[in-house]
Length: 130
Image (cartoon, rainbow, N blue to C red; front, side, top):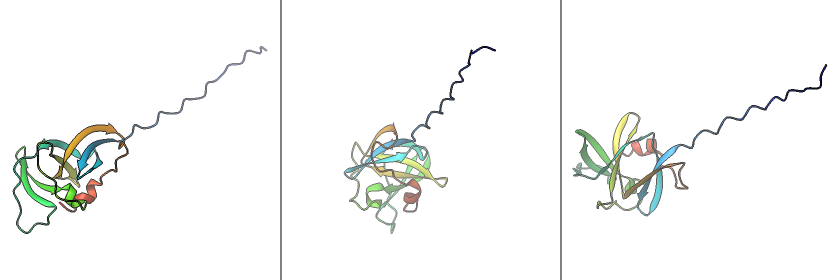
């Protein structure tokens, strides 16, 4: 018998799963992160038609690619003042429970891994206000 021992390498641990990706958005004066799994597209704010007797956070309806989309002012939904619609403002079309709606935000930023330290928005909870 020989003393030639065969070393068996320990199996490498699988790599950690990638961090969920988020779209950064500015709402009022704070940054938030939206899970990209809910984001369908980001568009410039076009004409929004007000709905009579709708809650203040429901800014109205708009058309995106031929579809009628309800528009929720994210700042009002989170208890801040109304979002000013200017050149930086964006409509983030999200989907929750199979239903699209637009989140009006002051600015849309980059898609990042993780949240970048910003609080993550619960799109499912916001859907109830839309």
